[in-house]
Image (tube, rainbow, N blue to C red; front, top):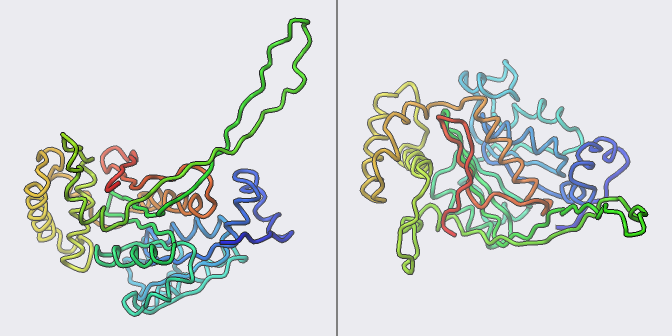
Length: 337
C-alpha cells in the first residue's frame, strides 16, 4: 500500500493525531480503503473510530434493515429510519463525522460477493459472521495479502480476533541522554531525547487454525496441554450458537436459547476436557443483546488494531482480545500460533 500525501486541509484536521502517531502513519491511513461488514451496535462504534482516524475510504456492507431494536443501540441511525436499509440509513451521521472520507453503502448480501470484490481493500473488518464466513473471508484475504480482523459483542461479553498474516511493525524507542556531568564538571553537550525505530514481526495463524483445528490446543511435542482462557470457550460457544441458529441469543427466546447454550457447553466440556468451573452456566445469562458500553470498548479495540495494522506502528494484539463479562477487564490470548 502506497502512502498518500496529506493536503493542507487534512494536515490541519488531523493535527492532533499526527502529533500522536506521526505524519508517516497518517499518510498510510489516508491511503487505506476499509471494508466493514455489519454496522449494528458494534459496527457503528468501529465505523466511528476509523472514520475519525482519517482513512481514505470506508465501504459498509450490510443487507439488513433498521428495526426498532436497532434504533435503541445504534447512534448513527435517525429515529425516522425504521424499515430502511441500515447501510444507507447511517450515511448522513457517519459522513458528518469526517467529510474527507469517502463512504459507500453496499446493501447486497455478503453471499453475493466473489473473491474479486474483496481485493479492492487494504483491510477487512467483520462483525456478526458465522464460522464458515470467517474462514472463507480470511482465506480470500490471505490469497490477496489483505489484513482481516473480526469482532462481536454478546451482552456483557465481547472479543476481537485478527489475522494480519506476516505483519511487520515498529515502535519508537525513546532514550534519554546521559545527564551526568563530566569529570571536569561540565554539563552534557546534548539533553534532547533520542528516538529510534525498533522493527519486529509477528506471524499470525489463519483463522481455520484458530476456530477449527485449534481443537488440539497443544502441539504433539508438548508434554502438557496449554490451559485456555475460559472466555475462549465462551466465544466458541456463542459462535457455534450463531452457526446453528443464524442469529445471536435473544431475550425474546431466552429460556430456549439458554437451554441450547447449556447443551453446547456440555459438548465443549467433552471436546476440550476442561473443568466445569472454567465455563460456568451463570455466564449464559450475561450474553444477550448488544450492550452499548461494551460495544464502545470492543469497537475501540478493533479500531485501534485497524490503525496499527495499516500504519505498521506499535505492537498489535496477537491474536485475540477477550473482554471479561464479570470484571470488564480485557485479556490478550494467543490461539493457534
